[in-house]
Image (cartoon, rainbow, N blue to C red; front, side):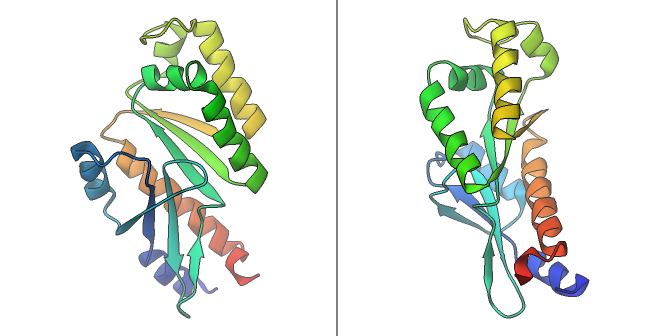
Length: 174
């Protein structure tokens, strides 16, 4: 694809939102800020991905290549590594097996909060940190901490950059 074809393809991007993301006012506001048309679909992993259409009308679906798992807080993330650990691990195992690059986008926290135990869980800071870092190595995901108002922009920008890199590398040509 030429740079112009890539740009046009990305201009036709559609956000893919997992059907398990609850339809709340907060989700609708997040989608409004993201500013892309969206479809609710069952994703194999993560909460968000992207697809676009090339100049020939061929759909390029990135859901098996890139996904973002969004968590609203360190409390929710801690629960994933404790109470929901088996389900959470299966999701990352599926992503790894299919070659899906994963990001965890965790809102309203920081490494400082996790190291200092500023979350609601009996999970110790050492165990929490160890789980995050060990899993990031094991499953190859990146974790990003941000404010909730930044999350929609990051979702859009991460997915856009991942799709652009893939298209520029010739991935869609063969």
